[in-house]
Image (spheres, rainbow, N blue to C red):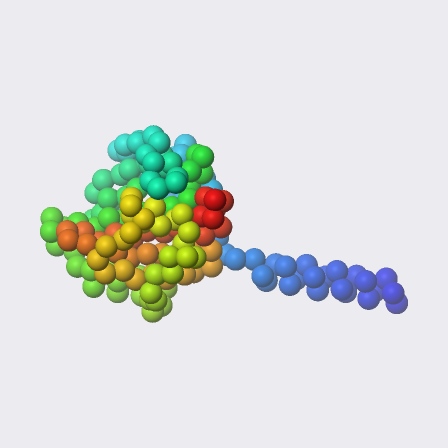
Length: 176
């Protein structure tokens, strides 16, 4: 009887652990946080890319992998993958409102459809991830955010573009 109870207790713990796991955030083409730059380039379906190694933003040095004129949420955008220590930690999608005629409201509506209502940006929870959103660590213009599991999605409107940045809140650089 004791063996059966011990087995049932262990089974309950395994089931609870499986239920507690967060689903993995998957971006376009199967890209997930934690991949290295080569893995992202293999997964990405857009052929042309530009690599900008070691761009320091605040206390963090990012390597950037950039793609232009990518279709995201049914709209043309520029795409930037941000790496710290060759680990993907943030993804930024930039919609040019002047050249492409995309509105802030259209981008926000697409995000609300996927993630529900937005909230104010919690910069404290974002930690050093604020530098993935803005080089200076001070996003200007209208800002909204969503949190889904260990990912924070930040929407920023400035003069001529709308940026959506997906930040891995579990990445070590966040609170470094």
